[in-house]
Length: 144
Image (cartoon, rainbow, N blue to C red; front, side):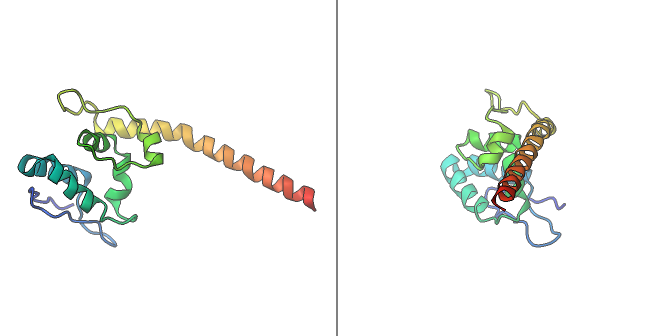
């Protein structure tokens, strides 16, 4: 990955088609922090939302940023919500940002918690899907 020289006036390097260098979540955060320092929160949030929402559904940061608890909690601290229904369940609603603004949970701990939740959620979803398939097959067999 390329080390980007990020300033408050940078424009995000979006993930393109195929293998290429693009901004990581750490780069997005660094950019937001620098914009807040130079231009204040409202402008920084507006710029962040504009460029973040310029990404398409096949772009890596857009897809996975909502599942990174540290990143999500940082943005929530500034009033930016990038989560969706599933990410709210998997990431949880507890804050990883302490009262002084320091991160009290590492990305590794966040990923570990997400993996533990997935171990519980995925089998439950599979069981529900199997039950639905059995019910559909049973109903079709009774109609014949």
